[in-house]
Length: 267
Image 1 (cartoon, rainbow, N blue to C red):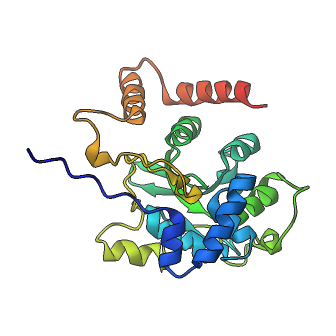
Image 2 (tube, rainbow, N blue to C red; image 1 turned 60 degrees about the vertical axis):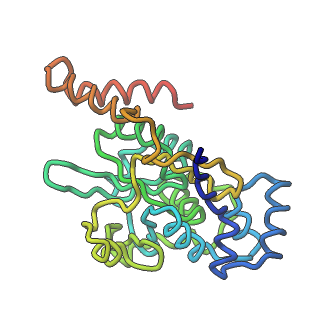
């Protein structure tokens, strides 16, 4: 009898960083020891220890995970976009609304996140805003600076040069701020035969962005799900659409109800 072939083990972040030449083995061991003691993610630990700069680290993660990376230094986020996500929600979910893009009848909110594969957060914010959410990676220092600049969060935290990045000299935040690895997103998607506004990652794959922790469990890819299994977020979307189409509920009523529920949950 033939035995089933084992699926190759996904490499941990530290291994991929060493292979890419961004750190060496000694730096990895030192960072893992620091991580074990203090509990921070490996990526943050490496940056904190000065072993790697955040920009090449995040570009490496963008390639590794398949999510576009937002680099918004020198840009400014529109006030109407920021108003979509209250400060308490942005702080709780470690996210920053960046810009809105229209594609026919659909409107997408591009959302900078440390954990772009957090489906629960994406579902919640999609219901809150009434917009499709397009998650993208953002560096934790850039995110911290954005939360301080736009929402006044963490003003007592240690400042850095990143706090002066949002001066608006480069114009508004838009798709030209997105990269895939070392390439602008437009160039990467054109090479892949896709539209620049489409995600390079499979939105249905429960990808543990915890790959940044080096010890995260591996999630089963979409291709290995049980036959006929439908993601919960798709079920909710279909149910919402059906209620609206049947005239049982209007979209405005749905959004208002979600906002009211979220307001009661906020501290």
